[in-house]
Image (cartoon, rainbow, N blue to C red; front, side):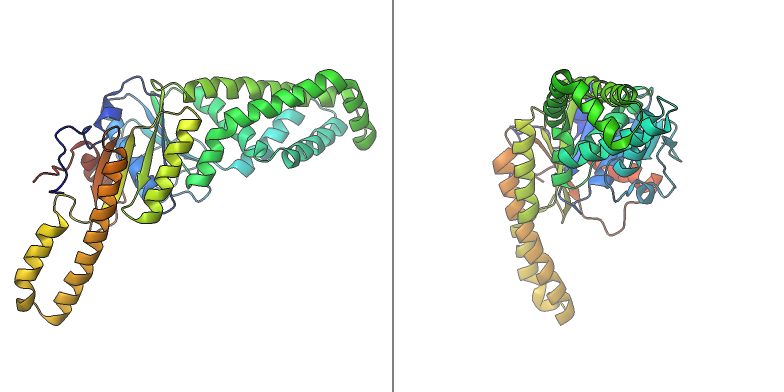
Length: 358
């Protein structure tokens, strides 16, 4: 864009993330429909050029990784066709919670204990909103930490769900602290009451549940420390040049700051001719529109209106974040970005910045 002087701005690309070798966790998030999955995959492709093993994880209930890579991706790390060192996996909180219940109950062979644990977990998830997702997320983090990957890219759900996911460490630590406090004070009473309601071994049921909660809290604390370390974790905000998306990005940046999570990159997708300026295109249109057929004039007029709107919000984005953030403009293409080859090609735009002064 011709009216933006980028001489003193941070480089408008994600090269800073690729070059930061200490990063282990990269979250990619934003409003629904802004291109988070494509950005996650392209970032994974670029990271794979400098890292030995890269894992891309979808935490969005509406998974799109399989569509982006044009292959079936499951709950376990799946090698991606066309790459030697990229794997991907898609997780589901509901399935993880069912596995978690089975795992806790599986610590004992007592059927009554298993029934009691399931009942208590159901009550617990109902009384602490989001704890089911939090506990399944802790299971995911344990699984991922046990795998040998240099960096993990999270393709997250739309903003609200993502903020809840990132707040799990703080919220769950408080919730579990309260549960442990009640256990210390009223453990015997709770165990006896649970046994009366559900029948079976009160001590076994209580120990199975408390043991897993303690384990979950340990993982969450470790994850929380990692999330708040800018050397290990960063968050990439993705948006499109429209009011609602820019507004959502501002909200996301503020919330990430509250949680102490580093964010200094914004990707703006679906930009019409990012190297051109609306005024420059407008001058061309004004001088040539009389030579164009009516249909062509209407199409160009709509395109110009869209370009002017986009330039306004891109300008606002640079005003808000340009001094401190790497703002990367990604072009609107005339084809979908699907499959290994097109992802490789499009990923180059993430690290080779558009010259805004051309």
